[in-house]
Length: 318
Length: 318
Image (cartoon, rainbow over all chains, first blue to last red):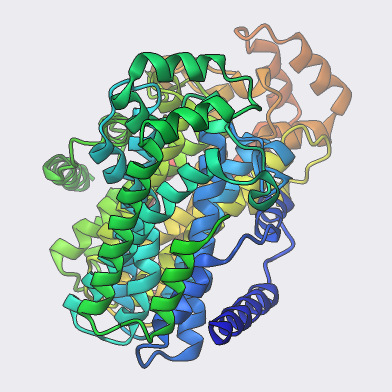
């Protein structure tokens, strides 16, 4: 395990180094200043780590693999910048979001620019480049669809868990699927393998997001690094809220209306006593299981670092 | 000449037909309804016409050529949707803009989706596809830079005409350059030819935009199809305004402050008597000349339909 942690640290450092050497023009400042600002915020680098761990299973050119990881991390950044405008979110990773630091027009344009730069980086890969960009753009369109569903679901009172999961597969899972499958694609692996990796990412995304939904209520603020309960304050359709409503709509509605933004005791009690927490945890685990099975289908098993990283994601507490 | 007009009509019809048969998914509506709405607005189709007229000079595969024209028209649409948010424009082509008809989040996402679909269409071309997408994305980044400069120039009081022209080359010219050069690229023409066509587009863009600036004050409302003088009301840095300010800053400032949004008589008189109009017209003509010279450098001369269409653009009154 500690070997894997060392490897992950190494990848994270190499990735950050590579991103730092990546130089953007100075002018026009209106475009490049907000882009640079948005790239300063570091995040956990889950996606680049997955790219590199996946790539170690195939004979990837190391430079190409680094390009895939930078391109996909930029794509992730682009979606965050635009999503933050759409969702009127003012802070991200303890910093003002781009449209707060600058303004909405700057943030729209910065997002467009980051997306374009991401395309240029992936387009500079020679191996299987045409398939690579098609698969990449199909994935981006899925993310757009996922974000659209998320917006559509806002305020919907009778959302099914299946619909929610379908949304998460697109909004969160598709990008993880790309992180896993594009390294195989540039190594000309067969399409079954590529698709299996893409599916693994979608399942992983669902498990990951549902855990996020749980931590938002049951996590420890000091570990999560942000205040909890905001999904409840904003009456957001999460896996927890959907299952809780199905269990007892009136009581859940009373509890969330009474929520003062701080004291989660009663809400936690309700979710535990009504087995909502357990049920949602089981759903998440079933998706992790499905992700592991996809890996096993292509002979990536417990001994593999990628498999190990999936386990770490499943067991994270932040 | 009438032969050319018939050809252009034919291209426009074929293009519209092709765009109509191009089917988008029904769901999620949050994404695809605004996209469909934005594609309903037809415009003059200058860009697809240029793609097809350029392509007739090379041995382009007709299906590929159509894809280039659809991809670039969608790219144009994407920039309009996002620019309209950034510039708070409420109407376009006599219809509410996407963010007015829907809302800002929908319009941001619709733009992202259109951009992605444009990439997918261009990525489906097999001939020289890697170069094609790189050139295309380099052009998109230039458009982003142009839009950034345009925003930076807002309210700048001492803008030079050269800086304005540099901005127009990127914001308007780059896309016309892509319309001209990508057909050559998919036919594997040499890079000198491709670059000359790209330069021709940049020059054409400057001539085109400066004419627009002139029409905004000297055009006929019935021909232009919108009310005039809005650039003056919003104190926009156009070629006219920049040259007028250089001529007599105080008087120009008085005239624009006094402008009631309707009566352009005094403003027109000032611009004529101070040779501002003539000077700006000459600048536009010098750029058209440069566009014609670029075409001639690659043996596209007066007898060629593309050259003829450039002439039509130079002589348009709307």
